[in-house]
Image 1 (cartoon, helix red, strand yellow):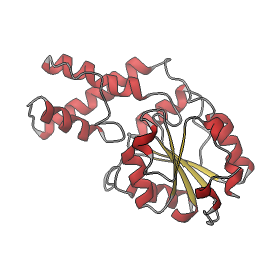
Image 2 (cartoon, rainbow, N blue to C red):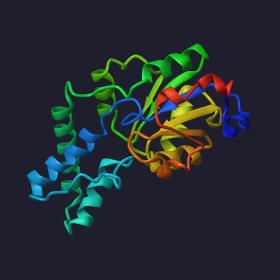
Image 3 (tube, rainbow, N blue to C red):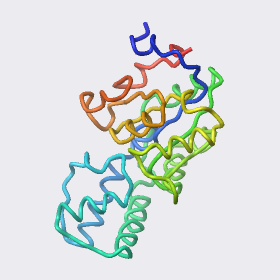
Length: 226
């Protein structure tokens, strides 16, 4: 049975847009954990394992967050060094350890059967996104991949989602987005898209700014939007 929100949703849907970390690939623990290695190695600082403040944001925002939290500072050159180091550490520790979020294959198949386009929209670098998808053998499963690039503001701004819709050649109002962070939800809503949140990274009560919250892809039937 359709939820009240789905029943009241009248837009013609032609595309499914997915965040990457925590939505396609179970990579958030390793992606965030790479910062532990970086800050321990460079500053002998234990940043802990509570990553809610950085999930969904850019690497630059993560560095700024930990600089502020631990009263650290650094030039733009140092920030860029830390970002590159984190990317390197992540690729090393994540290789052959990533898995798909359960049910993602079925979800993509559903979208294809509905003749929808399917894209990725992430605040991560294209290198990281492509690495993640290759690690779980999904690199050829998408019509477009949009990541962090010069000129695009990061989530919670809508730029990445608007660019994804443009790449897919669809109107933003024709897109369903699946996100796992408040920043991502806000960005997709700002873009004028219908947003479904999955509780892989945050509890349900934090994600209720979305149009719909699911605990797993088993709870989602895309045909309910047709």
